[in-house]
Image 1: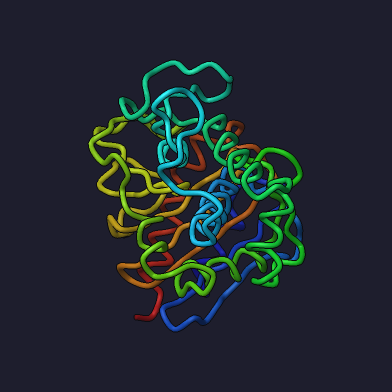
Image 2: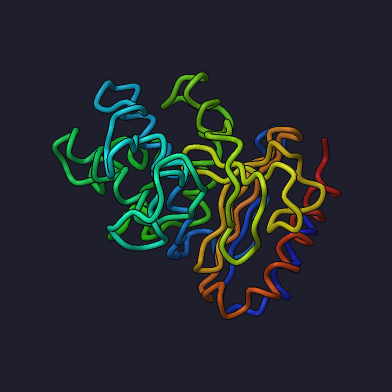
Length: 273
Protein backbone atom coordinates (compact mmCIF):
# COMPACT_ATOMS: atom_id res chain seq x y z
CA UNK A 1 0.00 0.00 0.00
CA UNK A 2 1.53 3.29 -1.14
CA UNK A 3 0.64 5.13 2.06
CA UNK A 4 3.02 2.92 4.04
CA UNK A 5 5.91 4.38 2.04
CA UNK A 6 5.48 7.62 3.99
CA UNK A 7 7.38 5.95 6.82
CA UNK A 8 10.55 6.25 4.69
CA UNK A 9 10.56 9.98 5.48
CA UNK A 10 10.48 9.48 9.24
CA UNK A 11 13.72 10.60 10.93
CA UNK A 12 14.38 7.26 12.63
CA UNK A 13 17.08 4.57 12.26
CA UNK A 14 14.58 1.74 11.71
CA UNK A 15 10.85 1.52 11.11
CA UNK A 16 8.39 -1.25 10.35
CA UNK A 17 4.66 -0.76 9.88
CA UNK A 18 1.44 -2.45 8.82
CA UNK A 19 -2.13 -1.59 7.98
CA UNK A 20 -4.95 -4.09 8.50
CA UNK A 21 -7.87 -3.53 6.16
CA UNK A 22 -11.57 -4.10 6.70
CA UNK A 23 -11.41 -7.61 5.25
CA UNK A 24 -8.36 -8.62 7.30
CA UNK A 25 -5.88 -8.14 4.46
CA UNK A 26 -2.52 -6.84 5.69
CA UNK A 27 -0.01 -4.60 3.93
CA UNK A 28 3.42 -4.00 5.45
CA UNK A 29 6.65 -2.10 5.08
CA UNK A 30 10.03 -2.75 6.69
CA UNK A 31 11.21 -5.75 8.68
CA UNK A 32 8.04 -6.97 10.36
CA UNK A 33 10.01 -9.52 12.39
CA UNK A 34 12.40 -7.00 13.91
CA UNK A 35 11.95 -6.76 17.68
CA UNK A 36 11.33 -3.24 19.05
CA UNK A 37 10.52 -1.98 22.52
CA UNK A 38 6.94 -0.86 22.05
CA UNK A 39 6.96 1.41 25.13
CA UNK A 40 3.48 2.54 26.24
CA UNK A 41 1.73 0.48 23.59
CA UNK A 42 2.42 -2.15 26.29
CA UNK A 43 -0.48 -0.66 28.26
CA UNK A 44 -2.97 -1.91 25.68
CA UNK A 45 -1.68 -5.46 26.13
CA UNK A 46 -1.73 -5.10 29.92
CA UNK A 47 -5.33 -3.90 29.83
CA UNK A 48 -6.39 -6.80 27.61
CA UNK A 49 -4.66 -9.34 29.86
CA UNK A 50 -6.31 -7.80 32.93
CA UNK A 51 -9.74 -8.22 31.37
CA UNK A 52 -8.90 -11.85 30.65
CA UNK A 53 -8.08 -12.21 34.35
CA UNK A 54 -11.48 -10.67 35.13
CA UNK A 55 -13.26 -13.19 32.93
CA UNK A 56 -11.32 -15.99 34.59
CA UNK A 57 -12.60 -14.76 37.95
CA UNK A 58 -9.10 -14.07 39.24
CA UNK A 59 -9.76 -10.35 39.70
CA UNK A 60 -12.63 -7.88 39.27
CA UNK A 61 -12.53 -4.36 37.89
CA UNK A 62 -14.00 -3.03 41.11
CA UNK A 63 -11.42 -4.72 43.36
CA UNK A 64 -9.93 -2.18 45.73
CA UNK A 65 -6.20 -1.80 45.16
CA UNK A 66 -3.76 1.04 45.66
CA UNK A 67 -4.74 4.04 47.79
CA UNK A 68 -8.06 4.02 49.72
CA UNK A 69 -11.05 4.18 47.38
CA UNK A 70 -8.99 3.19 44.34
CA UNK A 71 -10.02 0.22 42.21
CA UNK A 72 -8.49 -1.78 39.41
CA UNK A 73 -10.78 0.12 37.03
CA UNK A 74 -9.38 3.44 38.26
CA UNK A 75 -5.81 2.27 37.72
CA UNK A 76 -6.35 1.02 34.16
CA UNK A 77 -8.14 4.26 33.24
CA UNK A 78 -5.47 6.60 34.68
CA UNK A 79 -7.95 7.75 37.30
CA UNK A 80 -6.25 6.25 40.37
CA UNK A 81 -4.68 9.51 41.50
CA UNK A 82 -1.06 8.49 40.92
CA UNK A 83 1.64 10.58 39.28
CA UNK A 84 3.37 9.58 36.04
CA UNK A 85 5.92 7.69 38.15
CA UNK A 86 6.00 7.37 41.93
CA UNK A 87 4.33 5.32 44.62
CA UNK A 88 2.70 8.22 46.49
CA UNK A 89 -0.77 9.26 45.27
CA UNK A 90 -1.22 12.93 44.38
CA UNK A 91 -5.03 13.11 44.07
CA UNK A 92 -8.09 11.19 45.26
CA UNK A 93 -9.28 8.41 42.93
CA UNK A 94 -11.72 9.39 40.21
CA UNK A 95 -11.07 13.13 40.36
CA UNK A 96 -8.48 13.68 37.62
CA UNK A 97 -7.16 11.85 34.59
CA UNK A 98 -3.48 11.65 35.51
CA UNK A 99 -1.49 9.58 33.03
CA UNK A 100 0.41 7.14 35.21
CA UNK A 101 2.89 4.34 34.63
CA UNK A 102 2.57 3.63 38.35
CA UNK A 103 -1.16 3.01 38.05
CA UNK A 104 -0.67 0.45 35.27
CA UNK A 105 2.12 -1.23 37.23
CA UNK A 106 -0.13 -1.45 40.30
CA UNK A 107 -2.88 -2.99 38.16
CA UNK A 108 -0.44 -5.60 36.82
CA UNK A 109 0.80 -6.34 40.35
CA UNK A 110 -2.80 -6.89 41.49
CA UNK A 111 -3.31 -9.46 38.71
CA UNK A 112 0.02 -11.11 39.47
CA UNK A 113 -0.79 -11.43 43.17
CA UNK A 114 -4.23 -12.87 42.46
CA UNK A 115 -2.90 -15.29 39.83
CA UNK A 116 0.07 -16.26 42.02
CA UNK A 117 2.52 -15.79 39.18
CA UNK A 118 4.68 -12.94 37.84
CA UNK A 119 2.77 -10.67 35.47
CA UNK A 120 5.18 -11.33 32.61
CA UNK A 121 4.29 -15.02 32.85
CA UNK A 122 0.56 -14.25 33.05
CA UNK A 123 0.76 -11.99 29.99
CA UNK A 124 2.61 -14.70 28.09
CA UNK A 125 0.14 -17.42 29.00
CA UNK A 126 -3.00 -15.31 28.62
CA UNK A 127 -2.15 -13.33 25.48
CA UNK A 128 1.15 -14.04 23.75
CA UNK A 129 1.01 -17.84 23.60
CA UNK A 130 -2.61 -18.27 22.46
CA UNK A 131 -2.23 -15.59 19.79
CA UNK A 132 1.06 -16.98 18.49
CA UNK A 133 2.98 -13.84 19.46
CA UNK A 134 6.19 -15.84 19.84
CA UNK A 135 8.56 -12.87 19.47
CA UNK A 136 6.86 -10.83 22.22
CA UNK A 137 7.96 -10.58 25.84
CA UNK A 138 7.54 -8.35 28.86
CA UNK A 139 10.97 -7.47 30.20
CA UNK A 140 10.13 -5.27 33.21
CA UNK A 141 7.36 -2.69 33.65
CA UNK A 142 3.88 -3.67 32.44
CA UNK A 143 3.42 0.00 31.54
CA UNK A 144 6.21 0.34 29.00
CA UNK A 145 8.52 -2.68 28.65
CA UNK A 146 6.93 -5.10 26.20
CA UNK A 147 9.21 -5.92 23.27
CA UNK A 148 7.46 -7.10 20.13
CA UNK A 149 7.32 -7.06 16.34
CA UNK A 150 4.92 -5.70 13.76
CA UNK A 151 4.07 -9.27 12.79
CA UNK A 152 3.08 -10.11 16.37
CA UNK A 153 1.14 -6.89 16.84
CA UNK A 154 -0.83 -7.59 13.66
CA UNK A 155 -1.88 -10.82 15.40
CA UNK A 156 -2.93 -8.79 18.42
CA UNK A 157 -4.86 -6.36 16.22
CA UNK A 158 -6.79 -9.33 14.83
CA UNK A 159 -7.71 -10.20 18.42
CA UNK A 160 -8.78 -6.62 19.17
CA UNK A 161 -11.01 -6.56 16.09
CA UNK A 162 -12.47 -10.05 16.49
CA UNK A 163 -11.85 -11.21 20.08
CA UNK A 164 -11.49 -14.86 20.92
CA UNK A 165 -9.74 -14.48 24.29
CA UNK A 166 -12.42 -12.12 25.62
CA UNK A 167 -16.19 -11.93 25.38
CA UNK A 168 -17.71 -9.27 23.17
CA UNK A 169 -18.97 -7.51 26.31
CA UNK A 170 -15.51 -7.28 27.86
CA UNK A 171 -13.96 -6.18 24.58
CA UNK A 172 -16.50 -3.38 24.34
CA UNK A 173 -15.83 -2.34 27.95
CA UNK A 174 -12.11 -2.19 27.13
CA UNK A 175 -12.74 0.60 24.61
CA UNK A 176 -15.57 2.35 26.45
CA UNK A 177 -14.75 5.62 28.22
CA UNK A 178 -14.26 5.09 31.95
CA UNK A 179 -15.06 8.07 34.21
CA UNK A 180 -15.84 9.91 30.96
CA UNK A 181 -16.15 13.38 32.45
CA UNK A 182 -12.51 13.58 33.59
CA UNK A 183 -10.12 16.08 32.05
CA UNK A 184 -6.48 15.23 31.64
CA UNK A 185 -3.27 15.28 29.70
CA UNK A 186 -2.09 13.08 26.85
CA UNK A 187 1.67 13.32 27.43
CA UNK A 188 3.47 15.07 24.61
CA UNK A 189 0.20 15.97 22.87
CA UNK A 190 -1.89 18.26 25.07
CA UNK A 191 -4.57 18.72 27.70
CA UNK A 192 -8.17 17.80 26.90
CA UNK A 193 -11.49 18.26 28.64
CA UNK A 194 -12.81 15.66 28.64
CA UNK A 195 -9.90 13.26 28.08
CA UNK A 196 -11.54 9.87 27.41
CA UNK A 197 -9.68 6.69 28.24
CA UNK A 198 -10.66 3.04 28.25
CA UNK A 199 -9.12 0.19 30.25
CA UNK A 200 -5.48 0.53 29.24
CA UNK A 201 -6.23 2.12 25.88
CA UNK A 202 -6.58 5.75 24.89
CA UNK A 203 -9.78 6.79 23.10
CA UNK A 204 -9.52 9.39 20.38
CA UNK A 205 -12.89 10.99 21.01
CA UNK A 206 -12.84 14.57 19.76
CA UNK A 207 -9.28 15.41 20.81
CA UNK A 208 -7.60 17.89 18.52
CA UNK A 209 -4.74 18.00 17.81
CA UNK A 210 -4.01 14.31 18.18
CA UNK A 211 -1.42 11.72 17.21
CA UNK A 212 -3.98 9.82 15.08
CA UNK A 213 -5.35 11.38 11.90
CA UNK A 214 -8.08 13.90 11.32
CA UNK A 215 -9.89 11.18 9.34
CA UNK A 216 -9.89 8.74 12.25
CA UNK A 217 -13.34 8.32 13.76
CA UNK A 218 -13.99 9.31 17.41
CA UNK A 219 -14.26 5.58 18.20
CA UNK A 220 -10.58 5.02 17.37
CA UNK A 221 -8.60 3.51 20.22
CA UNK A 222 -4.99 2.51 20.80
CA UNK A 223 -1.80 4.08 22.10
CA UNK A 224 1.49 5.62 21.14
CA UNK A 225 4.75 5.00 22.94
CA UNK A 226 7.82 6.88 24.04
CA UNK A 227 9.98 4.62 21.89
CA UNK A 228 8.42 6.17 18.78
CA UNK A 229 5.69 3.57 18.37
CA UNK A 230 1.96 3.62 17.66
CA UNK A 231 -1.00 1.30 17.30
CA UNK A 232 -4.60 2.24 16.57
CA UNK A 233 -7.81 0.47 15.65
CA UNK A 234 -10.66 2.40 14.04
CA UNK A 235 -13.85 0.35 14.37
CA UNK A 236 -15.78 3.04 12.52
CA UNK A 237 -14.06 2.17 9.23
CA UNK A 238 -12.68 -1.24 10.28
CA UNK A 239 -9.07 -0.30 9.61
CA UNK A 240 -6.10 -0.59 11.98
CA UNK A 241 -2.43 0.39 11.89
CA UNK A 242 0.79 -0.24 13.75
CA UNK A 243 4.20 1.39 13.32
CA UNK A 244 7.33 0.67 15.36
CA UNK A 245 10.55 2.67 15.41
CA UNK A 246 13.69 2.75 17.53
CA UNK A 247 14.06 6.50 18.06
CA UNK A 248 12.66 7.95 21.31
CA UNK A 249 9.55 10.06 20.77
CA UNK A 250 11.01 12.96 22.77
CA UNK A 251 13.80 13.34 20.21
CA UNK A 252 11.39 13.94 17.32
CA UNK A 253 8.06 14.73 18.97
CA UNK A 254 7.26 17.83 16.93
CA UNK A 255 7.98 15.93 13.71
CA UNK A 256 6.12 12.82 14.87
CA UNK A 257 3.00 14.81 15.72
CA UNK A 258 2.93 16.02 12.13
CA UNK A 259 4.08 12.83 10.40
CA UNK A 260 1.92 10.36 12.33
CA UNK A 261 -1.45 12.06 11.62
CA UNK A 262 -0.46 12.48 7.96
CA UNK A 263 0.42 8.77 7.82
CA UNK A 264 -2.92 7.80 9.39
CA UNK A 265 -4.91 10.09 7.11
CA UNK A 266 -3.17 8.74 4.02
CA UNK A 267 -3.93 5.17 5.10
CA UNK A 268 -7.58 6.01 5.69
CA UNK A 269 -7.95 8.00 2.47
CA UNK A 270 -6.45 5.28 0.29
CA UNK A 271 -7.68 2.13 1.99
CA UNK A 272 -10.40 0.21 0.11
CA UNK A 273 -13.70 0.06 1.98
